[in-house]
Amino acid sequence: MTYFSFRRVRGARGEGVFEGSTFLGSVAQRRQWRSRLSLSDPGLDLYYAIGPGGESLSGSFPTRHDAAEALFALATGSSGGEQGFPLQA
Image (cartoon, rainbow, N blue to C red; front, side, top):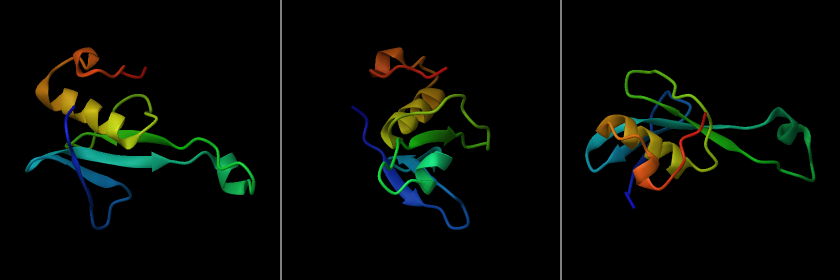
């Protein structure tokens, strides 16, 4: 398991993801619009990943750590399957 640091980035919506001192990209939360209006059920929040160049990775992820793993797989050039998480389509 890889450990990541999440730091707030001033002026950005999400959090910066660091593996050690290496910047991998950003992770932001996408809330469903129905969950904003609902009082009883908060719904499922999803996360999306943004690479260091500003490109958005396709798909969404159930946790911010899964999104950070996808950024790590992008940075290291691995497919992601051997990291222990499925890549989202």
